[in-house]
Length: 313
Image (cartoon, rainbow, N blue to C red; front, side, top):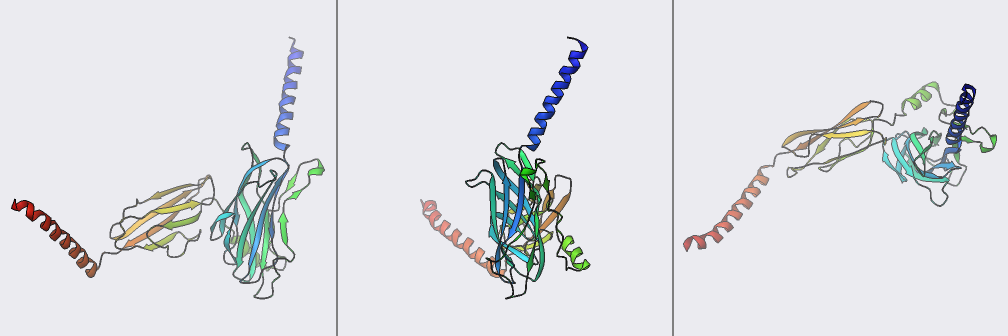
């Protein structure tokens, strides 16, 4: 084969693989959105809908959802977590090109709260990443009695989807700003309240008792008051990001006094955060010791009653 033919063949092969690569990366138009049902007042519950639509079959959607828990609190729905971070996971129901997750929140304080999807991915049925989640919106909570009902106008901030443009571009809504009438200080505070999902826990509990203070992703030191009869305690922890690694140290055995257990969260990017749980196991009081001694003595007496006839033989 001549040198010129070799060059033509190589050029054809390069063009072929380039065309194939373009098809792989552009074969699906995918966008995500967050919709809020109405404008809630303090004390009211409302529904937040996270929706993902694609022109290709969706296998699963896994994403983090950040919010300000001083303004709204998570009640329940297609997510786990709380304290400002949720892990949302959904699967197609009927339509393979659409996933919809419904979350219920309660308004707890007047003000504005940004809801943001972050650190999430949309996967195809064969495990290919179709897109990253990026939508966000702002929930405005009004004073008691002056909000709209759940059937009133909805707030919807989502990615712009233009399948007919021919360019297959998706414009992100992740840069949503606080309301225009907010002061510079309020805008700065709103931005500072949005945590990074990676490297945090969304759930932490202890089998020996209730955490004090109540769990929140940004509180790292807790105390648990166990019973004197508790000899073991199991720590259960769940990370916000699927890629985070969680390690629990300190064992399960409980000694009298202080028992420190640590939970280390290592993010994929290398960030390390440590949560500490100090389990206090008190020594039994005098009455408990006396009862324990009486039980032991009663057991010994029964043992003697059974043993004496044998010894008398």
